[in-house]
Length: 377
Image 1: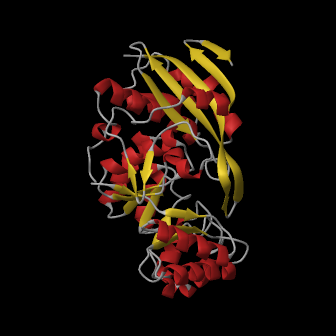
Image 2: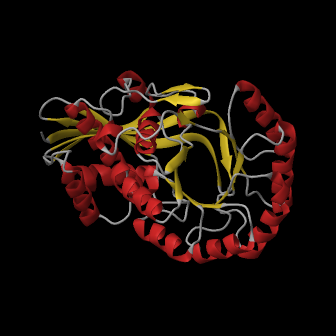
């Protein structure tokens, strides 16, 4: 079996409401969808959701790199040769992890369909009985976040994730305590600062003021790359620390292990380069006694399903936050959510049916790559 054709779509997924985090506000979510076809007629889908603030990628650049650099490298390759495909991609261009993730995910979709197995059976089998997801709240005024948190609890969500890291930590602290008061002491709450507290001293001061908030963990309080700073924060506080933007490569995971910088790591397919490297990173974390999560760059059903397959396959990946499809006003897939669980399909591959008409409707640019030929749509 060989990959003989690829179609690449730049798309924009409209959001029901703006998604607000510490470093950006998104009125819609740009992405790139890759459709691979084999000489046996099997079709697989992958997705890239680049984030210029984290991976350094931007959607137009990702589209062009896929079209001109990465996809030509994997034409005529067997998707089962996934390690070789990653070596080819890495030799062609450094980093560009979201672009590489799109190809990786599409290859796993092809493999699963060819083997008549769900992707998780190709990477370890079923390690969990079910998969839960939290309600993710954007940064807003304390009273608005508290109201939305109470509504989420009443709807049946079993945990909350609060986006904080605004202009001052005092307001963040007010947000968190307002939510805690609204939902009571039993509801699990995790917070994501998205690098917003900047310095170690600032973060330690804020975290210590949150000791009574009973937080499950605090995610990425300071700027990415400062793993030594995370280790310092962890030593000076008692609330568990999760590393997110600081976890992009296996080298990052090893440095976190060496410095004992985090209790949890947030692995994202868009940061790691897809399912294959994400599983390797999770295994390294497991060996060090660190719990992993598969997080989201706000992907559609395609990228979200890929992340859930990774979660399903590993015992030490104990949480997931892949809720992009719930945030979109229009989507291309049919990943099924039923509070508080996601119903990951047992169908072959990703188990996601892609609506080609919706894909065309939401596309802003398309092209086809066959052999050495490129055709713009």
